[in-house]
Length: 96
Length: 457
Image 1 (cartoon, chains in turn red, blue):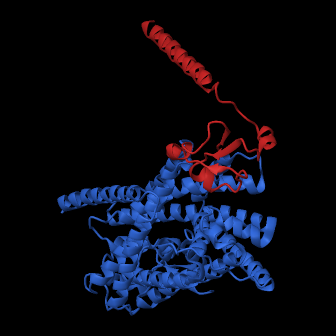
Image 2: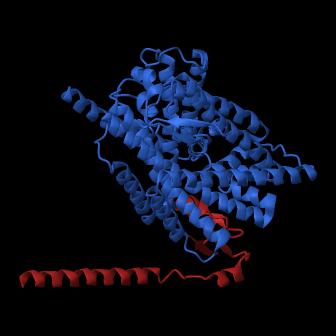
Image 3: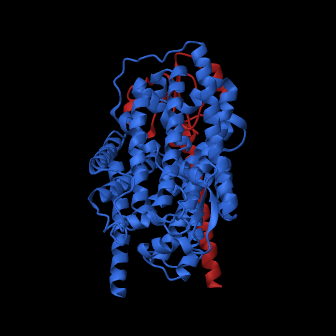
């Protein structure tokens, strides 16, 4: 009986933790929008839009398709490429 | 091409209680239990790694990096590899087990490096299975079926390869012939079309104003790795070792010859700068030559090349484990080769799941493993350079006529190439670190073996 109670409590704690993590993730990502391909296509080529290809490894090297005008931006070199980006422009990051 | 070679049944030879290479040479002519084997599987396994899609892309980069010197550098690389193949056979003129991987065991017998051939093959099998199947998944999605999940196809390929290992040897060999044959046939078609259209359009490769990358000088050393995955048959003495050496060397030479034409064709159709910096140089070249049809053909070749490389590695590891068990380097457990193969596939699947294929680390792991494989060829050459016919259990001086100067040049070029290819990588310290850790692992296994071997005496 005690063992069952402990299991129930642990399960509830894990569930609560997961819910909290999910909530925080959602709230943290709330500042960053999601764009679909039609929306991107409509603004592609605009001067105030910078498309960044953040794919790494084989996600990038194996793919034949690269968005026209996209800049390659490696995640481990974010300090390098982010310094040259204008904060006034719309940044669109795409991954695998 | 239609010649047959005889494989000796290792079990029958062991039953006759023949243990030393010298006894084996005297008795092979009267040994029973031999069976015929076509030469096509020998070629197919020898070329298994060479036709992998990573190499097809690297050949394009090579063509872009070294420009008009590509054929010359390739011929130099071919000569180095012919030396490796000669040395490989010289050190084991009378292989007497069915799978031929005993050659590797004979080269580092009962030394600290005894497990070196096995460790590098296992690492290559795991990392290449991870990377190549994922790449094939992307190709399948982007070339053939746009909606099919990339990783699903990668897992299907890996599962199919695992299933193939449970079929009989006959089916595995036939499958390997089909895989390699598909890539060779595809290359031939693209070369013929590319050269024909290129010559009709009077295309001339442009000479770019860019310095030649020094790594390009040594790339052929990486791109021809894998001839020692061939199933090498047992022979009666130096006669059939000569035939085996010719088979191996002809496989390497024919493939190198095809690639000479491939790099020329690539340069006729694609700008050198674009080739040199593209990760999909092979796809771009195929597209320029044949449009959508060329792209589809290259897609088929990429998937076939993946199957050829991973199947050759799985087969090679299984045979090597069998050989090691027979030599007492590993426990004699009948299912050990299959367990090892399943473990490799499971680790590869796990690495795919954790997303390693999307990390630059995987490329460094693959490069480090291939450099260690190249190091094995260097060690073989160094061993032959400093060894004597007596220490190498040869009944006579090498019948294939390599002198010490040739061996010295080969060894020098090999180790220089390893150093250059490591140092010109994006992360040279990581490459060196991976090599160091792997060699330490090999030495630890070798030390444990020597410790137990000396206690049992």
